[in-house]
Amino acid sequence: MSTIFQTEPFTVEQGVKPQHRAQAAHGYWRAFSRKLRYPLGPEKKAVAFLESVMDPTHAISAVSKDGAFLGMAGFKSPQGALVGGDMRDMARVYGWIGGSVRGALIQALERTCDGDTLLMDGIFVEPEARGQGVGTALLNAIEVHCARQGLRQIRLDVIDTNPRARALYERLGFAERSVLSLGPLRSVFGFSSATEMTKAIVR
Image 1: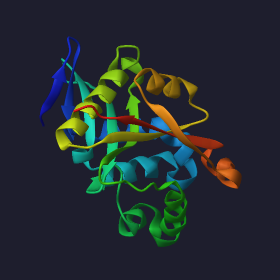
Image 2 (image 1 turned 135 degrees about the horizontal axis):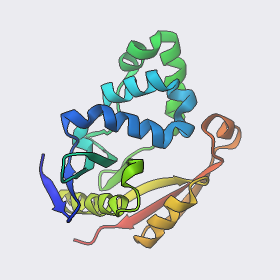
Image 3 (image 1 turned 60 degrees about the horizontal axis):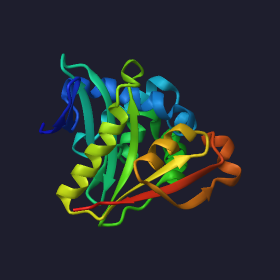
């Protein structure tokens, strides 16, 4: 794993250390369980699925000086995604019938990724690390990664029930591009709309 940059209390690194994989899966579920409770729940199966399909090459993590996992930012590119997997992966955890139903729900959340754009695939900070600038550092590291890869912009979606996240993105220069309404699916995913935001990468 390579260091993207280092601050006084923690380091931001490319990837996820093998010893942090299980904690990263738990953290991802904790952050997005409201949205994913029907597609991936219950918790035990959801965490098992996330841990099995997580691709650390599509993640950036924050680690404390003493080696504790502090948070992670995942992303999607034309080459893959932090949370990928296929029907066989779903079936291993949920069975073929359960996997088919969950796969259809996940498909409703899928977003295409242009070749010049990095698409965020979830960002979270562990509860004990909040308020230390970890989230901002992870987003800054995503920008560094984009610049190194020669990408033009970062794109993310923020749901209407998370105004604090939207405020952070706006402070960091992300701008609203469009709003997608879920309609009747709002009761399934726990939010009514998602706002697409983008930020151009200065090279």
